[in-house]
Image (cartoon, rainbow, N blue to C red; front, side, top):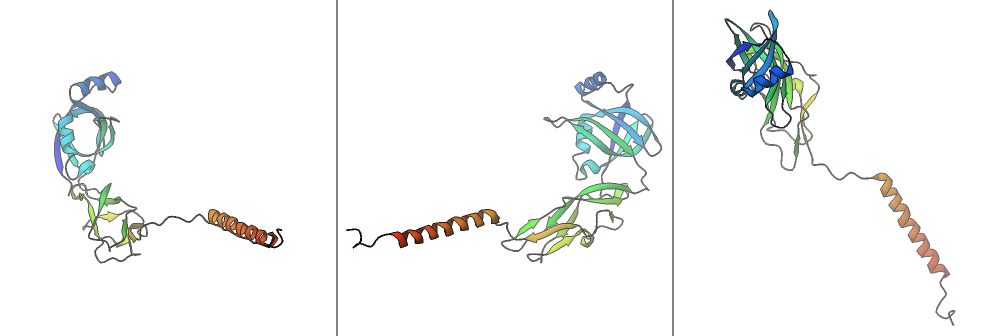
Length: 219
């Protein structure tokens, strides 16, 4: 289930680039909070606290209790912008939520079990889109491939999810399949061209044999 983590935030007077750089130099992360019954407010939070909050099993689905002065509200981290090289968080949104109202989140789909010998597990879906109460968000959803045979497919609608979780993906969409290893594709055009060359060489060889003089004729 989603972790609920407390982070203390402080308001910031503006949203200029200069202010943002200064905050980052002090180990703070500029952010903005808005959402259910919460006015849009620029804030900043401690970078280490934020990093720890997003390093739990829930990851970016962690439910965070954002405290600003004497007020607090539950929020989900969204629109997380990171440095392209260092991967430090440069800015993010805290979207306020109601603990009694379901939210839409994407959670990892984890495959368990052993595939048949000589087969390959193909997983077109690495995450599932679900709707669930904020404090009931699962860290992941698992699906077992034990007992499946080559050619078998698991569709979204066949995946078992915890009580209270609603799947939003198309139930007919393939989530996992068991296939044979890919073989080298045959280039039919190249194969036809090669057949033609071989056939032409055979005809030339046959014509040459018919025109060649016999040993007695050579004298």
